[in-house]
Image (tube, rainbow, N blue to C red; front, top):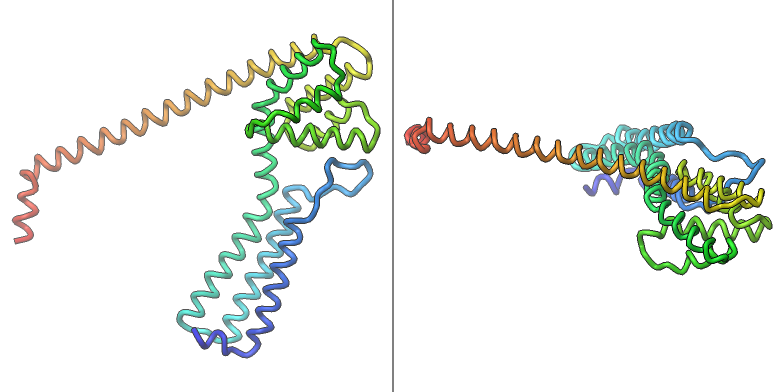
Length: 263
């Protein structure tokens, strides 16, 4: 292991590796805008992000492999740097590029599940003749951890509405668009349209809530059927394995055949 640290140029290699990691960290933790601004350059789509990650991963892994070849490392240091090269390729080329997409997909699923609750909350508030801004402000007072994604969205909508002087539901629709939840975007767009036209919101919300609840119920039933099939499959496999073990035990005379072979 000492040969690795005594290799000429090892300090420069560490500096290059540290710089590459700092650049990657800066790309990961860079501040993001609350909502997409019209006219600004779009962020990298998943394909472009994957290509950029692959290029960075190949460069970083190539740097490690080149260091192994140039230093003519053997034994433990060679294995260590080889494993580090594989880990760097997987982390920078596959895991990091997909991290944002997976986060957005999880957020969209969570928002989709709690959208009926938001609709019911707004319906109750509108039935009490509250202003839309007051309804959204009161929604933020809920402390349930399950509602955290929706609270973040509503908070973003209120901030954007104040900055751009938009109506509350129009700001909600603007904040919901980049979240990737189609059902929530449809509800927010319908609210914004009703708000701008002055049409009754209750009818729109009732139809949206009924449709979304039917969709969620059908998906829940499909999930139950899939889990039931998985459970039955596991039970069948366990039953077959148990029967085979019992048959083997009987055919070998309770394991006496193996004891005779051992003697």
